Image (tube, rainbow, N blue to C red; front, side, top):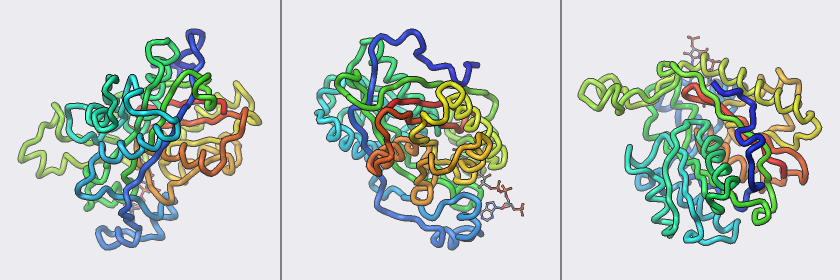
Amino acid sequence: MADPVQPATAGRQVRRVGIAGLGRYVPEKVLTNQDLEKLVDTSDEWIVQRTGIRERRIAADDQFTSTLAIEAAKQALDDAGMKGEELELVLCATVTGDQPFPSTACRLGLELGAKNAGGFDIAGACSGFVFASQVAINMVASGAYSKVLVVGAEVLSRILDYQDRNTCVLFGDGAGAAIYTPLEVAKRGEFIGGSISMEGGAEDILAQPGGGSRFPASPESIEKRLHFMKMGGTKVFRFAVRVFAGLVRKVVEQYGADEIGVIIPHQVNQRIIESAMEQVDLPMDLVFSNIDRYGNTSAASVPIALREAYDAGRMEKGKLVLMPAFGAGMAWGHLLLRW
Ligand code: UT7
């Protein structure tokens, strides 16, 4: 298992890498806690108190993960002043791709006119964007590619069981995107560290069990509702607080708390974020959170929040932007930028 805070590129980085463009997209349809009260035995009060979530977005029937990803990517391209055909690599972080294969990145590349790019998907669940970004950044750092798009996109509503109150209240749909280039082009958001970690054997804690080679689609898998997400919430809660606090603590030890401008964590649950911040003795006003409006959007949550934090003027020139992410696997990691 990798050291959870060892920068993936430490000592090996050839070119400095930054963020040239950011984008986000969420579907129009809003599903409120009150709406959920009509579907399962829950209450607005319970959901707000236990999670901080008030509403989440749900993809329309004719929207897929690629549809959401395309919108976020277009905004990132616009932000970077770049055309799709300039892209050299397209990575899509998702666990709810349009189909098991081909990759959603191939559809995304086609729709963006990225005719000179290669692409593939990365299934890192809630850590997907942070993992895919490090693949992209190291590709740019090595000199292999200079313009790489990373999109985190999910339509989780299609794998949620709206009979299961343990999961259906927590998640939503959306997409976020970032374009990585050499720093002299990007001029902001220099990558200075990251990590990718995992501890396996957690298929019964947080998973979509059905539809793969372990439980292929069958009348039995459908009857047992195995194609829907299953989760042991309390175990995930404890894991998330532990690894989130650990990642922040190591960055504070290395750089000092004063260097941190903003923490943009995976938008998992407001109580998890508060517990972790309390453990590391840092104030909540360092954190950017939008979980009240979108719930947990898995791989999309960090890049949606990244663009919104940017729009809200939360990036401070010269200060650190820390993005810890954690989820199914169990897997976790972080991205650290200097703005
Ligand atoms: O990206 C990672 C994805 N995973 C997550 O985001 C989940 C992380 N975990 C959590 O966010 C929390 O564990 C939950 C919000 C899922 C649950 O909060 P909790 O404080 O750990 O509650 P609990 O699981 O201990 O359940 C307490 C009670 C139970 O009832 P009993 O057994 O005490 O009678 C649950 O059945 O709350 C019940 N409950 C609900 N009640 C109303 C569970 N879900 C609901 C609900 N509405 N939606």
